[in-house]
Image (cartoon, rainbow, N blue to C red; front, side, top):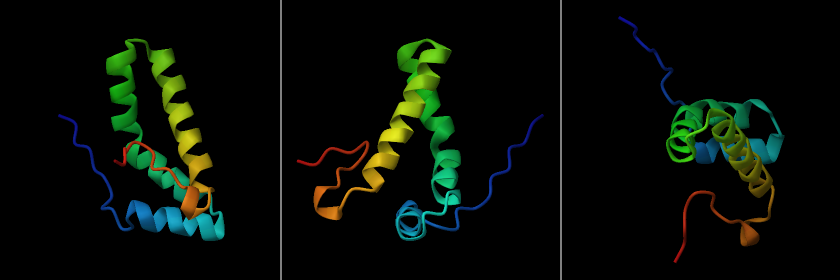
Length: 84
C-alpha cells in the first residue's frame, strides 16, 4: 500500500503570486506548479488522449499563466476563470 504525503499549504496561491511579482523568487511559481501539475496534467491527458500532447499543453498553460502574472492589474486576465 502506498501512502502519499503532501505538505500542508502554508501560503495561498494569491500570496505566492504576490511574492513572485515583488521578489521574482523562482520558488513561488515552482510551488504553484507542484501544487497543480497532477490535476492539470490529468485533465489534459483525459481530453487529449496522448501523453506527449498533454505534457505540451500543461507547459503552454503554465507559460501563459507566468506571462499573465507580469501584466499590470488593470490588464490582468484570470487564467482558467471566465468573468462575465
